[in-house]
Length: 65
Image 1 (spheres, rainbow, N blue to C red):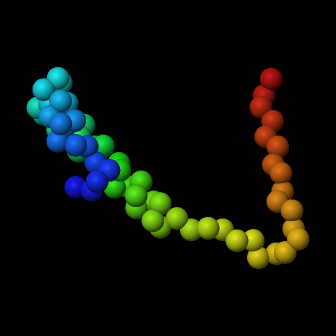
Image 2 (tube, rainbow, N blue to C red):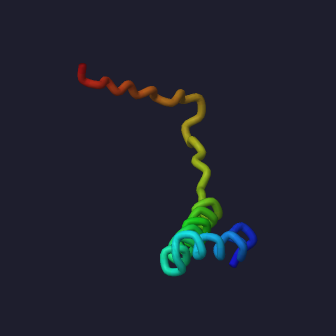
């Protein structure tokens, strides 16, 4: 488990208050979400414009009245 995951005390508190099965599911879900966020941050790609001096196009979205 990484250092950002739930601590033993937090995991145990979930299991005591909402039940062992549900607490374990929620703790595992949170740990999986943390791993996915870390992976997305690690593989994030910066976008660099290759046409110098071109201003980004502003897109206006009109909502129906």
